[in-house]
Length: 119
Ligand SMILES: [Zn+2]
Image 1 (tube, rainbow, N blue to C red):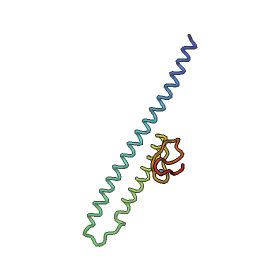
Image 2: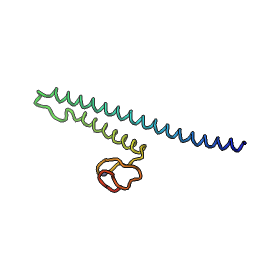
Image 3: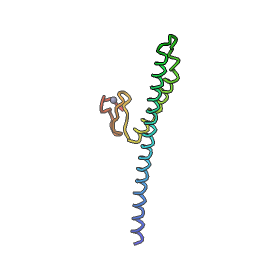
Image 4: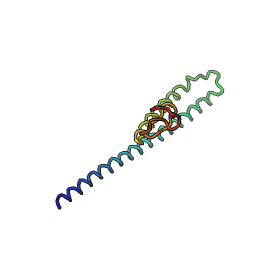
């Protein structure tokens, strides 16, 4: 009787661990998705600022790209952050990203499903 109860407890503990792991993965995925949409919003706002800045210089003869280079650099940094987050999300989903065409394939694949590039 005692043995059976211990066995059940062990199974429950094992199952519990799995659930916890899954939950933390979902949590991590949600966190990354939120961070990603935040960055995309930031980029949209930067694009707006770039547009406004270019337009406000519309009548200026002395407009140079330096006037908006800071904003463009900020967009580049945000894009780099997005790329890092995308990589993490792919790792969570257990997929491989093709270095040639950027398509995603399952973790077990030896070749890219889209272009045939070897992994
Ligand atoms: Zn490919």
